[in-house]
Amino acid sequence: MDTILPLELVTEASPPPPLEAAAQRVASRLHELFPALEQGDHDGLRRRLAALVVAVGRIATGRAPSAAPELGTAADNVLLDRLEHEILWHEEGGEGTEVVQLLRACSAYRRTHGTASPADLSRSEDLRTRMLGPDAFELLVEVAHDFRSPLTSILFLSEALRDGHSGTVTDLQRSQLGLMYSAAFGLASVASDVVDLARRGKDLVADDPEPYAFAEVFRSVERMVLPMVQEKGLELLIQYPEHGQSEGHPHALSRVLLNLTTNALKFTDEGSVEIGVRPMAQNRTEYFVKDTGRGIPADRQEELFQPFKKRRGQGQKGDFFSGSGVGLSIARRLVEAMGSSLEFTTSDEQGTRFFFVLPAPRRR
Image (cartoon, rainbow, N blue to C red; front, side, top):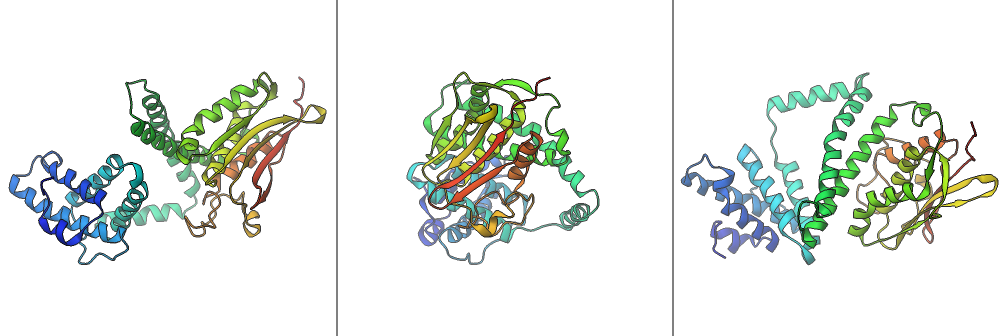
């Protein structure tokens, strides 16, 4: 490969191979990224890119960047954005762990060395004032509403592309589209949960029960979580009577099972997640979601269903469920609106099992 970046990038900094390869690709496309600049200006951009790569490489390998440049111009942010893009979309296979470290290093560098203008600081302070005011929750709900439509579009498009509806895709592309789907799905779920938090309990389900098939409910959950299951290499077990039917609130039921299943997948590193339904006495039915992950510590069980709780040690071993707790909070409220209560059992040996028993539907 021809050396497109300054020679000292390769001979002195010794960045990780995926980072160096990504930098070479970015350097070779400067004329596309900055078409209005003269060729002489590109030499300065290459030096700037080289400095950014050295700093990111040092962070990724556990060394503090020396003489790291601040992100003082729009060009710097374009270079860093493109660098992240190249790392994400062109590195694969056994380099996965290193790629994640490089992406985290890019984010860490941006947080540490980015600059903000007085106008940016003013807008930030104005938003902080609003979020501390009496209309804070209404503002949050408005933002969640605005998120849902574009996220839904991303879900449909990524699913269509992944399934080959727009042409043949490679295994790598299918995996990447699965990651995109999972990320958009997670955000869309949080947005929907925030909107539902603003509703009163009685408004969460329809007034009258309606008939539904077990297969329809569980297959819809399976379709939504399958990319997450495949990405983590887990086994998804589904238990329901093939031709079984019931009467109740299928939309609310699907939301609960979906929230519980994604939560179980999030905190299960190996083994399986099982979802299902089983008949009980007096025409009642029990729904459950069981995982083989770590048990939930006793000192965290009391706050399990509290929304917007503060996260303890993000990404560390004690992080057993969503830091916001919105998904589990909504799941419990939906279950209560259907006339039941959400319970769980947990241990390090057996994993965690969430369950609820729905009463027999009232006949009209």
